Length: 190
Image (cartoon, rainbow, N blue to C red; front, top):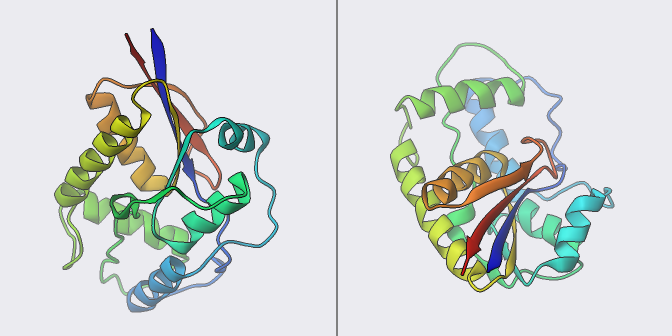
């Protein structure tokens, strides 16, 4: 028996400040800059994440800069595969006439997106199908007892975890959704 392993790691702390108050429209612009931006330079990678990077056989990353830079920092290498399916699920900001911090906008946006409002962006159902496809791809890459390291995003990593579990994987450990947090998914094979 062997064990296939997928390590889903959220990117490091982004360089774009979250200490601002924004309108709904300003949040959309802020989110676009967030997606284009990288991470705070020289941040400390948690020891556990670095250990998994040292043991990994294959490295996948979202195409977003913050995920690629995080993989470089954790593993001191480039990704083997940049998988478009790993990009973060969208955050359509609802037209609420308030100025909120990005974290609050993220919460409101995720709630309305989850219940069906996508404002012309990728829907929850389409993102779920993308998570299923990403999970299938990662599962195939891990076949034969490999360790696959994935540099991705908080919410979408959570979606991939759910898709992997529906495909027979188990979550061996996890520590939340903050920057550098991770989920270790395992599948025992003959």
